[in-house]
Image (cartoon, rainbow, N blue to C red; front, side, top):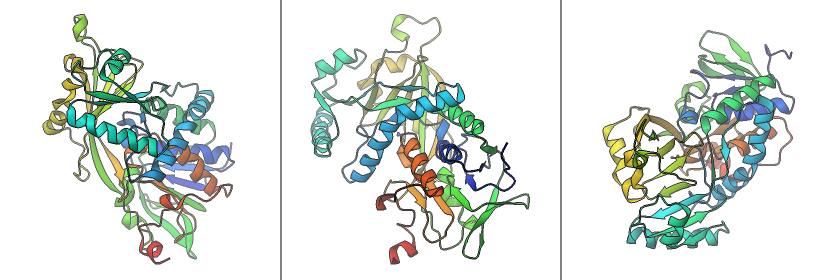
Length: 389
Ligand code: GLY
C-alpha cells in the first residue's frame, strides 16, 4: 500500500468534483488524500437531480460552457463503465434523452428561439409538434404547445455515481478523511506546501486542489490573499416523488421515459420508479432549509406539463447549494498566482455533467500530462492578478 503520510496531492472537498480529480490523479500514479469538513457527498452532489443536459440547459452567452458540457457528456458512458468496473457499483447512468416542453403560447415562441440558438451552436435538437411530443411521452399534458427533443441529453443518479466514485477512488489507493476541517493552504517559498488542519497538523503536499463546491468562496481565510475564488452559494430546492402505496393507477408514477424540462423546472425519472422535480434558483447565502415558498415554486406550474405529478407521494424534499461564479462557468486547473494550487470548483448548474471532464483536465494538470485548459475556465479570470496579466 502506498504511503499517504506525505501525499503528492491533497484535495479539499469529497464531492463529485473532488473525488473525480482524486480518482483520476490516483490512476495516473499520484498519492492522494481527500479532506472534507463533513462526509462524502454532503454538499450539492447528493442533492442534484443528475441531468446530463448540455443542450437543454444551453444559454446564448455560454458557448464555451456548451462545448465543455458536450465534451463531458461524451465522456460519461466511458466514465460510468470505468467506475462500475472499479467499484462493482452501478453509477446509474441512463441514456434517456431530454424533452424541453412549452406549456403556453409564450413558451412555444420562446422554444422557437431556443431551437434556433441550439441549431446555431451546432447542438443536436429536433422540433416536435405537441402531438408528436405526447406520442413520445403520453404523460405530458394535452395542453402543451410544443417541444424540443435533445436526444443526446441523458441523466445519471448522482448518489449512485458518488458511491461508485468513492469506492473506486478508495480502491485506487485514495485516502478519504471525513469530518476533517482545513484552516489554511500552507505556502512556502511562494508555492503550496500542503494543507493545515484544525487539529494543528499539516498535510504536507506539493499540490492542493480546491474542490469545496459552494464553500470554496468562503475559504478566504484559508487561502493566500492573491488567490481570489469568487464562488457563491446558489440554493436549489427539489422534491423526490413516487407512486402512492396501494394507489389507483391514476396515482401511480406517470411513466416518463425521458427527462422533461420546462420554463419553471424539470422532471428526471429514475430507474427505481421515483421522479425528481427540481429546482429553485435562490440567492440565500448558506441556507439549506426547505421552504414553503420553494415547494410552491416547484409545484405551481408542473400540472400544466405533467399533471400526474401532483398525485404522487413525496418521498423527500431537499435543498442544496450550487457553487455559482460570476459567469456561471467553472474554475479549472492550476492557479498561476500560486504554484501548486489547482481549482475544481464553480460548476454552478453543471457539477454532475462536468464531473468526468473536470476529473480528466484537473488531474492532467496535476500530473503534468495535460494540454492547457480553455481561458474561459481559467481560475484567475476574476482575480486582480488575472485582470492585470
Ligand atoms: N442542473 C440543474 C440544476 O442545477 O438545477
